[in-house]
Length: 235
Ligand code: CA
Image (cartoon, helix red, strand yellow):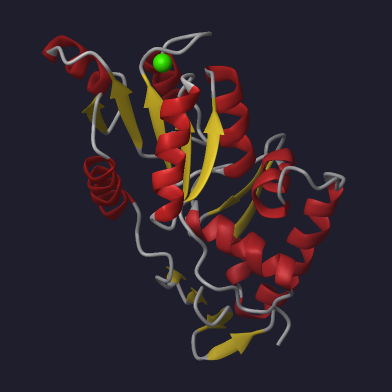
């Protein structure tokens, strides 16, 4: 086996809240419930955290020091990389108008302070169930199939052997098909943001990936977009 199969990773939640006692209380309860928790105390650090750790869900407080939680939500919805992340707004304001504003701004749900940890957890779980396909679902494109459970890639009936980096690259591209990623974005998402690798490394692994897919003709799904980067598409 080339890659050790990883255990199911914990879902990541980013808590954006400037009031430390509230943020820590939420983080404590979410960690105890089995989530991996990241914290941010303002909008700019929240944006860095999101690029850095790709959370599965974001809790955004309405009142933040540098900009409003509503503005942060709008920004996340405009950005290609965070457009689909589930967002729950936290607020002390119980007014209907604010709720509508929050939801119109792109939040998926809304919870009014004070809330119980149990209520927050049930909202989070409900939203995660609605938002994400199960992580172990097989990815299929034409005759190409990637099984995240066994880490195996098949074309039709035959297995193709891909290296661990090519596997991660292919998985990321298949999960985000029809979207163009720059080399820098692929480095962030596939290699991780704190790893220093040159952008042309991406080209090397794309070339290797295409080479293993080439005999079946499925290398045509891994497309170069001139002046931009790469895209996975069956079209
Ligand atoms: Ca606040």
